[in-house]
Length: 269
Image (cartoon, rainbow, N blue to C red; front, side, top):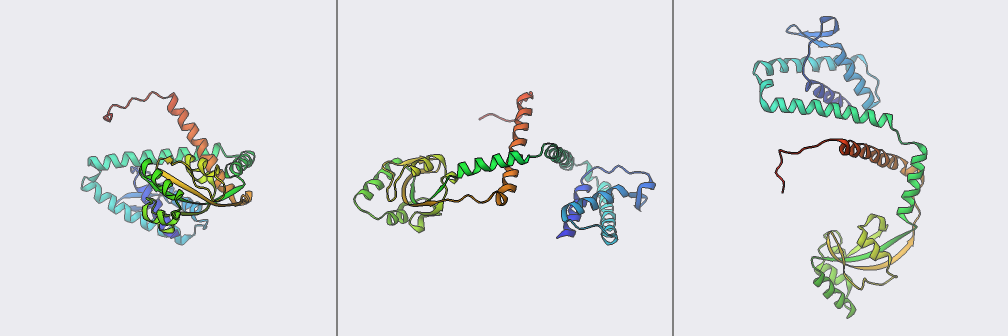
């Protein structure tokens, strides 16, 4: 797997236009064309960063060998005129753009790290959103409000909730379990569902259908229990990734707001 990542780095490097250097920078030549020392060094550095494995002479020899093979194929592709094909040119342009954008994003993250204070604040917000209770509930999901109202009327007559869920619910994840959703935090549910759920007492069913983007829900609260948030050490990496993504999104939205963007090649619907 580690060696495969080295080969992938070679493939990415091969996507860039070849600009041949002087022979002084070559570790090999193929039909008089040099394999650049800087290419080999870049691939080995990249492999070390990805795998944590220190490059050795064997890895260097393998990289050079692969680059020789890719150079042979590169030269044949040029002879065949593949580098002049419209699809190749578009692919090459997009590959360069992607490399540059990825390098820019990596540089942004490096220059705008999430601080310890931001992570601690993010953890407190996470605990607040998670709440101090988790819920065990069942639900029946149907397509229309009329169906949901009819189900609520049947439940009031004493019909078993699980039985109706198995017969009528449109939720494939809970239907066969009688609508059982197990234990969960309301923070993980869509807002209308969560708001209706926390307003119920143990054993109660929503008196009216609850609409979400998925359809109409009939919800029954089975039980609640205290919820202990996971310790900071276990979630700090995830919190850091989330906060870093938010920083990046905010920056990109700022660029978009300041830019003049005219979309003329896409038909509006």
